[in-house]
Image (cartoon, rainbow, N blue to C red; front, side, top):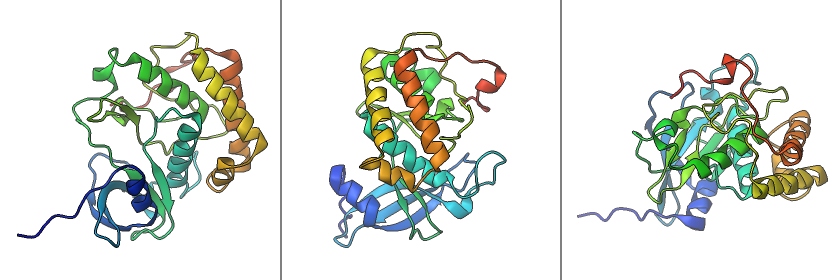
Length: 246
């Protein structure tokens, strides 16, 4: 009987996502863009699962440049990592994908019956962090189903392609905290990241290859504003809610 390939996690998994061979296994359901569950294998036979979003499979939009959503997925991960909030699963951009260049994200094993509306209010602290993150990256599509809980009970935010627009685009289901003060530790993280963005060194160099200079400036301003104002925004119209909600 053949032995199955070893599945890896941690840094070994990250290395696989950066360099391993991507084999799409099938389209994932209910996605507006072509989104594949992929098997990623290294030369030693180690494997991991990932979500692969090739640029050629993106649906054209009126308000976001064509072929940029995968790069925005990666940019969202970089900001999440810089903030040290771990909202977005590890994500890389693969120029050599089998169906074209695109994003490759760590697959989160989650109970898909659970989503924001079923996970609140028991995990309100995690969603306060996610809400602050969405303000900073200007997330235009935070649906309830984009919120996953893994086997370690950690909350993740996926499908972050509609982000970083220069105009206000926040559209989310997470409005329970509107008008509340943002926690001091989150404000301090936002202030630190705004400073790093202004300096333009280190991880910010990676970000420059993913979003435009104008988007980078707007991101810096939003992070600084969250740190200084320190309050969650309030919805201004029905357009502040995504559709469908889940």
